[in-house]
Image (cartoon, rainbow, N blue to C red; front, side):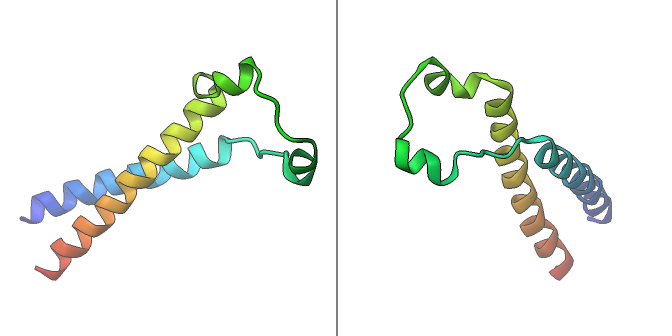
Amino acid sequence: MEVLKYILIGIYVIVCFALVIVAMMQTKDDSGASATITGSSSNFYEKNKGRTKEGKMKKWTIILGVVFAVLSILLSIMYVI
């Protein structure tokens, strides 16, 4: 049981660093109030946004966030036992 705990802690640390790095590499969306007033047009970029670098970074941020949450719950359960 102790070995599994140390393996999970190691994976947890790696996921933490990866999540911080991926989150810091993302660009900020500057649409703000101007996009609300003018509206956003449905162009080729908007339809294929998931295939761009920003779309992939967003997807990886979500995946790493979910893994982070699951590992947090698992580690808290393991420390209670």
